[in-house]
Image 1 (cartoon, protein in one colour):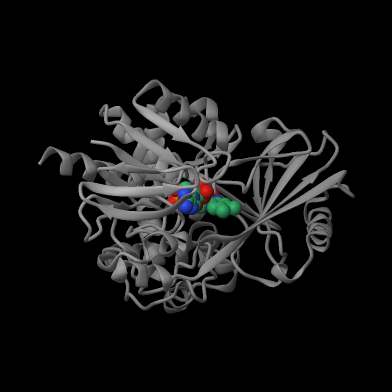
Image 2 (cartoon, rainbow, N blue to C red):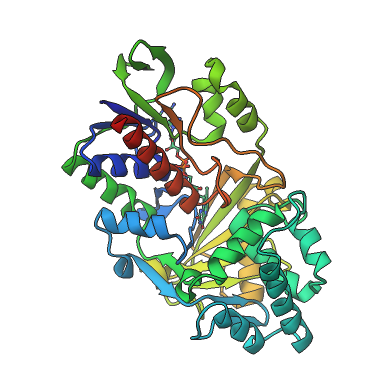
Length: 430
Ligand SMILES: Cc1cc2nc3c(=O)[nH]c(=O)nc-3n(C[C@H](O)[C@H](O)[C@H](O)COP(=O)(O)OP(=O)(O)OC[C@H]3O[C@@H](n4cnc5c(N)ncnc54)[C@H](O)[C@@H]3O)c2cc1C
């Protein structure tokens, strides 16, 4: 048995680690010079940064298990905090030390910056979702769901819209209410620690891909970087994978490339036409990260602060997180007016916002904008996402876009990789 994995993002790496653990020989092909895909390290001005600031939640069980499996000590690699949301100018919510969901209910009732009426309205909304067993009409948007439950403008601005953008990377007006409700259910109604915020203390490369590569080297794994797979052909006993140097044959293939690359590789395979049609129907949303380097003494009150009525949505203090004093990472999720600006214009507006809203004294010494135009698929209602299992025996799809209760997240990607690998294992056992 020879398994090929195409794509060295978190889905492909999760699949590779899962197979290597079972002593299955795997070869992972990655077209870029480095692993990590959309969650990777980038070097800027001599600093190890990320292509985008990432947040993990305690409920990312498979991701956290996988990190531990490859030797990452989570308490060293991540800053962990009970759910805390500080959104300027005045909203503050911190989950209480109570079992779920009372930790959130008490946190909401004790929160600052919204009226008593709003606090009860938010608690009522969450209990109504629980009462409905976390099921809503499949065609409902987040905005329509919030309107149905009469959530006020303040609640939407401070709480629900920021959560929707952070989790689904899709504007509430077009985001799928059911997927949003799935996230609320799993983060807030399981155990208290599920809602913990985990913010990486190391760059994303060190967080997982580097450790996964070491794990694969120590097990039966071959990593081929700078190796784009150009074509896949069905062969007598599996598949032929063509790359610039050669063609190699494999008994099983897990295709873990981003959704927009799948049709190029697999579009000619008739049994996959239904899956390709679902993938081609996906639309994408951007995420912009603006890095701003201030004096080393500049700090935030909490490592992650939200802003409203600004282009900037969340500000992360990389001094407090990754020991890069004075460096701020500002995240702007989903489509918006910022896409029309040049990077210099955007950085200048963001710097003014940080000065006006947070008192960060500028101008910053340098700025850098990283625009991921296809950061995630647009998580809209009634989306059909392809299964990991394909109709072609021996071929699986993995990636954050495949069928999942979750939006495009690291946890969805990792689960898809593990699921595909387990299916390879059970296929080989029969
Ligand atoms: C800026 C940004 C911020 C984000 N923030 C969060 C967050 O806070 N929390 C969260 O959970 N998620 C977040 N996400 C989403 C998360 O990063 C993705 O869901 C996840 O990384 C997707 O992993 P993947 O393995 O499915 O795909 P990818 O990471 O896209 O991996 C696919 C890999 O395949 C390779 N490839 C493509 N074609 C070929 C080929 N022909 N041959 C060989 N290799 C090929 C690519 O180079 C890539 O490395 C964010 C994403 C971005 C972009």
